[in-house]
Image (tube, rainbow, N blue to C red):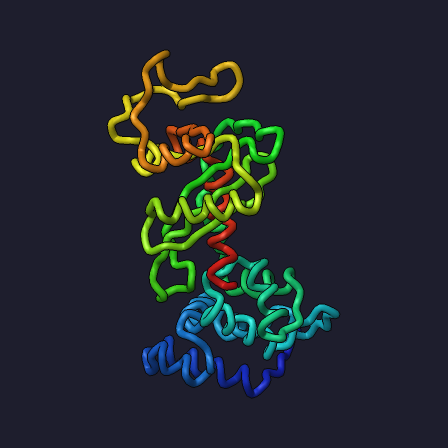
Length: 287
């Protein structure tokens, strides 16, 4: 059988020589990374490919075939380096946008996905554990009928820059974020500031849908087995006639404004605001 001969570039020969030395223990990951101008995570993946496939694993699979969609080695390396060193916590779509808008690398999303998947990199979004399915509560029919609220702590300003807590309100009917505010920790001041922002921009909502944090519900309030004021004909005030449930400071403020309160028993019950966090955690840290 006639064997196909392959001509390697000097760059490919250097890579094979260096990775070979790495596999033989004559060089460290750091030394190999410095010589090839890559990060250590890329070196580890290349080393694994070399161990399994040999030198052929370091040569592009389309060698010998001309492709109209061919991406140059320099562009490929630039994409991988940018992802490994700067955009490591971005999902693929957001990363592709940043390459075009910030790095000046004109490349399609599909090409970015192909480059990263060839290196065994999984999207941050696809790596998330699939949540259990829960019965969806129908959206309210009009804006302003119900605002869901919550807060979450995250490295919003990039990895290594500390955590902050984002408080936000989202309109149940429209999905519009009516107000949001950063503070160091979850606190009433954060919820009040975000609520004030929403009221200024959209007017008073009819009700606020929250968890049972003591900011929203007084610890003195009696325990209840079901959500207070659930949808349709099950809506109720959660209080027997003539008996007023103790209110938190935040709750008293809402009452003075004529805004009702609805308490959720589980995070899943606040699905819209919980999904909002996924979107914001994908987007805000890189903004």
